[in-house]
Length: 177
Image 1 (spheres, one colour):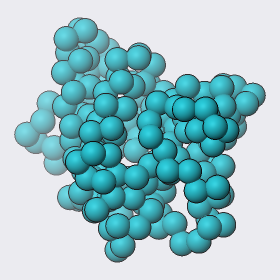
Image 2 (spheres, rainbow, N blue to C red):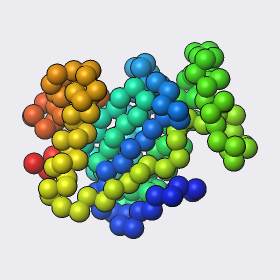
Image 3 (cartoon, rainbow, N blue to C red):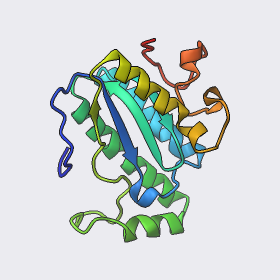
């Protein structure tokens, strides 16, 4: 994944990953920006055999437990596509303050770009056991609860917590428990 210090040694195995907006700017407060995230993940489910075990999208980051034919390549494609589409949307909507922040906080080595949307890397953690998978799924689902946004994880629209309670969510999820 380019300059990332995070390495993926088992590219087909499930990993816990975090994608964070540069400088924690709240981008996912609009339905249109979260729609871009979900459409991209749905596309990768078909194209790259992306299997999603758990997810949550908050206002400035997302957590994902997933595997694919090559999770590093899938996540690179995901971040590239979503950055391009979200920036296009923000420019169309004339979201000057957010665009100015994305330009200001852009890393110096990104000389060919006006803006940077995502922080570099995905901080991948290989899921090494059923216990670890369950712990990470619970962490993902309880993230909005821990932040005080909701009291019950199944109430968060942009999460797979509902899927684990038998209610279809926004993405196809491979339930493991």
